[in-house]
Image (cartoon, rainbow, N blue to C red; front, side, top):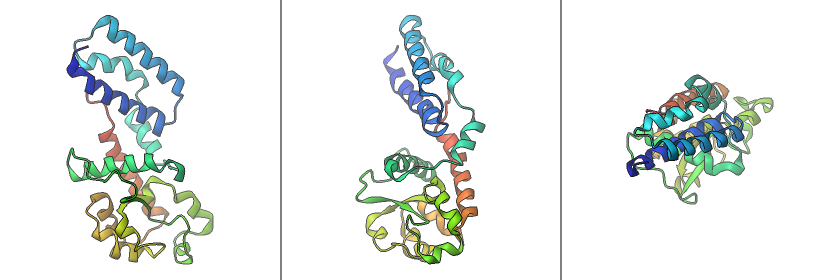
Amino acid sequence: MPDEFFPKVLRMIVILSFRYNVICSLNPNKLETAYSKASKYIREQKPTSIKAISEELKEFYPSDTDFRRAFAQKTVSASNARLARYILSEINRHYMGTKELIANPNATELNLEHILPQNPSAKWLVEFPKTDYNQYIYRLGNMTLLDSSINRKVGNTSFKDKCTTAFSASKLEITKEIVNFHVWSPKEIEERQKKMAEVACQIWRFDY
């Protein structure tokens, strides 16, 4: 395989693994078999184009429809915060139209913020009845990235206060755009996550 193919093949593997394993939660054993076959194909056939390699993996590439549907419902638990930060950072990079990773990878300097807090006060239960809010805390649509110096001032304050004191002051597009919402309820989380799913389709996709 030509050396210049290597970064593209690596990117292809990242995309496929993200779609297949992380978001769609499909059988990982099948994908491992596919990677083994593709590796053998590369060694023996010595393909001269990236498209030829991608065709070997296309069978396991979730369609945009399936990917969007799964992404729009995705939850990420507190124990997997690193994954949530990765997803949000990539979406923010897309929003800001840059190849540079704007979001600081240091979790102590840039916090994963749950807009609906993990331990919501009574103020939040107006929009999130107790039967509902647990279903939405760990939805991707309820998460963003926030500078720790700003985040310390936020706590469990109301959505309006978060927008005024924190989100509007952020340099990250994924966070600033939240101020366009007037309230924060299940409807807004669903709407935001569907938009994120559309963007994710453009980020994690085969273009070969």
